[in-house]
Image (cartoon, rainbow, N blue to C red):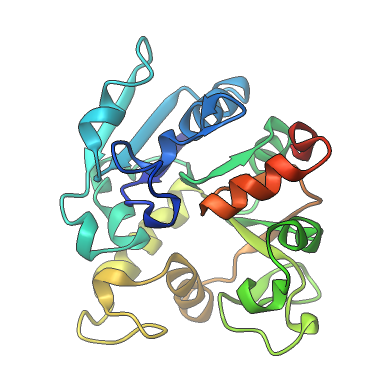
Length: 254
């Protein structure tokens, strides 16, 4: 099993904390986000770790000494998005993989639950997402995205703008598992996509990960939902950090 961390972005909503360092190195409880991700992987038995960086890459690559981490660079990080970043590590997409966003912190229990799932294609879904979103903003419906799951636990819609809370059976947290055999189909699907098309309002290079997952669900196979009830955080903005600090015991959020 291999962990691929997508860490190319600039983290503009976290400025000035990201003026001189990548988003994944913003500290939470005195420790950079990336440290949590790497340590959780190691606790869970994953030692093959790949980080795709971009913005302030030199700062990140000097971090985490003593660990055998492979780095790939998205040199077009200013003009691209998550899916493009993932495929910058194409030579490493040759095993069972976990794909992780770099602005999330999740407990070992969350990762172990994903690892225990036997599906060839699975996505972590938080069913108690409203507790976290309500802490971060006044109206969670304005920020949340759709998540629709069939009776067998497979996701058939995600990443759209919801009309009501009934459209949200959980929230995608930015953690995906794809097994090796199915991964080859995913790679071929990406390579065969129309590069001149628009995907949920974005061009090919700026495609959202949820748009890509939706395309896989529509054309190849629906991802299996791996349900959790909290145990993770997203640190997307300075307001998120303030909200967590305002909690009575924000260390217990994990």
